[in-house]
Every structure is written in structure tokens, then in C-alpha cells.
Image (tube, rainbow, N blue to C red):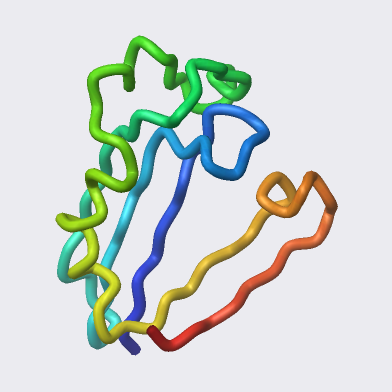
Length: 103
């Protein structure tokens, strides 16, 4: 099985507040590549520091997600993307969803 596992950390309740991303690429059921990095969100407003320990000071000089996209796009090519949307990402509901999509 080939897929990409990813994990976002967010600064606050806004969906565009990603402040960290971890990526692990799996091919033939083996880890073939992995990376993680800090992201500068569009706001200085941090609510979830108590969960992940990331502060504005940690990310203020980091690239934005848009600036990172060119370097991380190869992780997504020709793979099945598997992600879990937690209750935070869907407006704090208690639904957990696992979906597979073909890119």
C-alpha cells in the first residue's frame, strides 16, 4: 500500500492557522520519506500552545504554508492521501472521519 500520512498542528480555532506539519510517505508498506516543519500562520493569535508547545515566537520567521507548498508537493504526487479530520477541524463537532482520496 502507498499513501501519505500527515499531521497538522494549528495555532487557534481558525482552519487556516496551521503552525506545524509532519509528513510520512509510505510505499509498499515501508516508510520511504518523512519531514516536519514549522509554519507561520496568518495570525499571531495562539490558543493551542498548551497542547503542542508552539508559540508565535517559534514561527514568526518561518515560511507560510504557501511558501512551503513547492517543496512539499512531491510528497502528494500519485499517492492515496489518508487523513483524519478531528473534531477541531470540523467546527468542534465530535465526528471523526477517515477518508481516502486519489490525487
